[in-house]
Length: 318
Image (cartoon, rainbow, N blue to C red; front, side, top):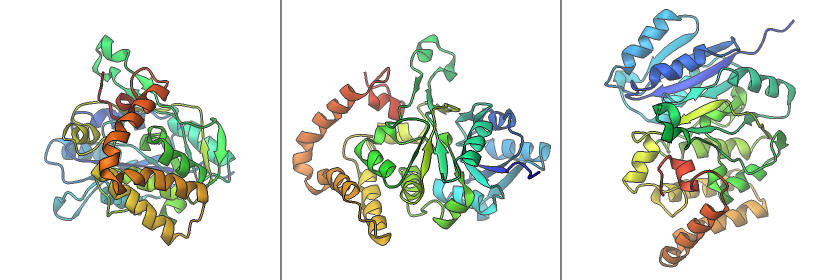
């Protein structure tokens, strides 16, 4: 009999001591035993370096520690690529140091990819997780992400990429996916020209433009909502907004245009959606009036407990 496939879990961390051990514990609790965990230190200055090294000592055959030369801070994309370079698994999973997998995550998604042989990746909905605080009010804020497609379906390119452009609120979380390592390697992994925000969307667009993807109905991961997360800090500093024009999205859209040209992608529907999304950056004065109306429409259209803004960023905008 063939041995079960190995899963390589990639977890970069930077000053992550507050939630790091809970993330690692969620991997140790997996019902699927055939995994390895790569902890990539992105220049941490707190106890998270010591935490990572403690776990690698306790589980030397399962958990591995990596760092950049001279303990440098090089960003999310470079750190994830370092883990991917060392990964040995048939499949890759991504887990940030403040998020958690549910125990059946790997077992369920490995089974799907083993059966859905055309799929390069599988993902499902993620729980936007406020109740980790233990506060009863936060428990009422927990919400499962909507994905905007019929679930338990194999979707061919470029349909998901077009959908993500139309409604960025349905882009999956990185902790929600499992992907073939060979596909990631063939696509060059994460783009190291984008390190901070939208680096995950760059990664997802590359996959969804290349390979069929299976979108499943199971929710097997928790995306922790807390004020020190990179997305919330960016929102508070007005560097980023999920639905109004902002500089980091403009950088992403320019990357996408160049990538589609490079790959000679000629899908009319995809390019039309791209033009709609890029229009506010071509006409910034007009978009100042139009974008708030679009934002209000998105909030009304969304069927989650709170606003789409809250679901996407963890920032309660009520």
